[in-house]
Amino acid sequence: MKTKAQILVALQEVKDPEIPVISVVDLGIITKIEVGEGLASGEAKVTMTPTFVGCPAIKHMQNEVQKAVEALGFDTVEVVVDYTIPWNSNMVSERGLQQLKDFRLSPPKRHCGTINMADLEHAQCPNCFGTNTTLLSPFGPTLCRAMFKCNTCGEGFEQFKAV
Amino acid sequence: MQSLKNFLYTIADDNLILGHRNSEWTGLGPVLEEDIAFSSMAQDKVGLAYQLYQLLHTDMGEGHPDKVAFARTETEFKCCQLVEYPIGEYDFSLVRHFLFDHAMYELFSMLTTSAYPALAQLAVKVRGELKYHVLHADTWLKKLGNGSEESKARMQSALNYAYPLALGTFEPLEGEQELVQYGYFEGMVVLQERWLASILPVLETAGLKLPVNAEATFGGRKGYHTEYLAPLLKEMTEVFSIDPEAEW
Image 1 (cartoon, rainbow over the protein chains, first blue to last red):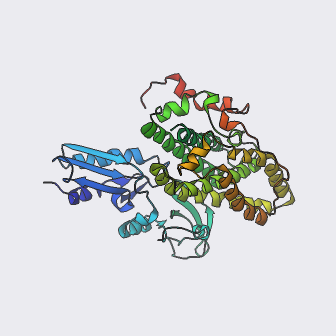
Image 2: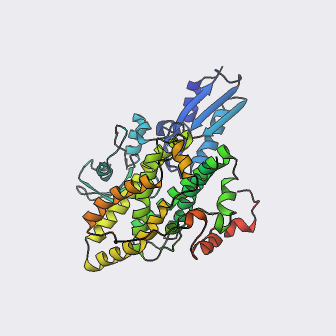
């Protein structure tokens, strides 16, 4: 009998192609895993949601999730993308935040549901950890990143956006 | 329900067409960061349009999103005329972006409590993304409004030009009463009030003034478009039209 825990472990191997150090689980985009209850034996259903509505990588990740779960030996695997639980940056795990830092991306600040416009303009520099920074642009090389400059060490850096 | 379908087409078409216009800055932006900003916003907007067409497809039996986006005629589009205009100079593109994205931010804030659950869920997501669009627009409006004499004059003149078009965003919708009655949408009048409340403080900080006695340019919601939409659709659908049945 295969379990949800086994699926979670398998999905650790499915990474975000735009930030290949973080898994879909730590990114927080896997919103539901179903095996057993209500499903036929040998059946699994995974629900996931994109970080940004226009994310070009979601179809790719959906296919990768499908393959990873099928490899566990389920007879039928269904992977659904929906917005029942919309993603926000608080859904990135603690480990995920650390992985983003190691990747030299400033991690999104934890928030309590809503973010003030003023909060969007600040980030911690992933190089020197300075907090005196300037937002260069709220848009970056991928939809989920913003560009900053650190006023302490002078380096430019990217932030994984808080949403 | 016809009024709800019409409403979803309206928002989706606005975002598809402006998304396409935004993408015309790719490779041409005045500085690299701005090139990237307009390209990213294009991606967000086309992505949003896709999700709305997807709701129309799965929940209301309309055609596949690709077909709906690429195979409708000009008069079937419900977009407002504001989004059809060519990108023009950067001042116009920025002012349009400012006026439109504040409207979208207020619209999607409103829709988070819509009685149509799938739309309300999507709205929660989209509102968070739109904050970045609004932040970008406000930053440039203030910077250029308070910049040199030339930058201020150009922003003011772009605002005078774009404002009547922006008022056209709030053209009354077919079946709007029904949408209000069922709690799907609070209506264009309320939306316009919130939009004004949201743009006025920014305009004030930027030292810009709304033109007086501006009259809204209506028509887009009923399928009456400017001369600019047909060439845009022709370009946008060029690849699709070569082989509409192709598998991608």
